[in-house]
Image 1 (cartoon, rainbow, N blue to C red):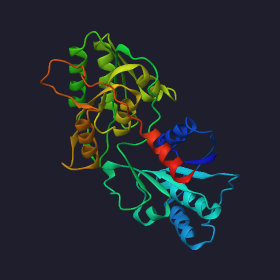
Image 2: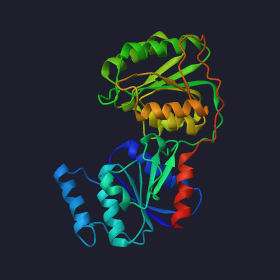
Image 3: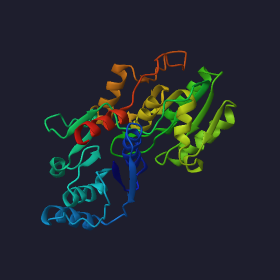
Image 4: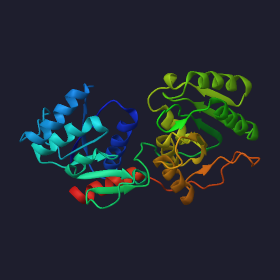
Amino acid sequence: MKITVFLEGSPGHEKQSLAVVKALQSLVDVDVERIQLPKVHVVRRIIDICRLFLLPDGGCSHTLDGTDLVIGTGSRTHAALLSCKKKYKIPAVTCMTPELYLRRMFDLLLVPKHDDVGVGAGNVFLTDGPPVLSDNQLPREMHTGLILLGGVDQRSHDWRTSEVISYISTIIERCKDMHWTISSSPRTPEDTVHELVEIEKKYPQATFFHYKDTPKGWVEEQYSKAHIAWVTADSMSMIYEAITAGCRVGVLPVKWKKNENKFLRSLQNLYEQGYAAPLDMSEEKCMITLEPVDFDEAQRCAREVLSRFF
């Protein structure tokens, strides 16, 4: 089969689409074409949506040669996906939840349960988390730990550098026989980065990597080696990546702005199923007693695609 993947520049979104494609390639012979969509003004996006409803071919400007299915993640891919569906009469698949007025037009929505969409529509396939690219194949390095930080998001939480650094210091001090690899992300503020540099100076068993200095695929390699991974609660994609890779996963708390949100729902589900554990500052340890789990939503999504369309 041939799949065309539409990519829109967001690493998190692109990883989800590519994870499903990679899982499909592990099951069947798949030829993949990638189309990188340019950034466009919001007015252009509105025009493209209108063309989608008004024109017989949906205003499709892409030439697809023998494509059996199109997939993409993120709102900037939706008009391209649906116009190709309309022109070429092929299934369109997206991860996450599209705008309400577009949902029925997709053939398959791969939606995390925390989006609270429900199962009323026949084109919705609920997942426990987003499909991710992590690979649980390599043996763990027992004395290797990973600490990954998210950062500022004005909509969901308050980022408190002093608290986050306190959590990290406590973990390192409690586990002196572990070597900790620490990394920031694009959302990590500069004052937090400065404190992480100081942590590396203070603790010989800690090494800090600024995300800008890490090559593509670096974090996936770290997942594959780490015995334990601590991730801040706002970084749901990294939490799911670490679980899928087979790490024992702990969650560093953040100060949520609302007592009810999709992040909290998702975390509670992970805790209840034993996929991850919250940080307990009262315990004199940093080890996580949870056993690694067989968790691979990309495989589940791939099998659903095959069963529905092929």
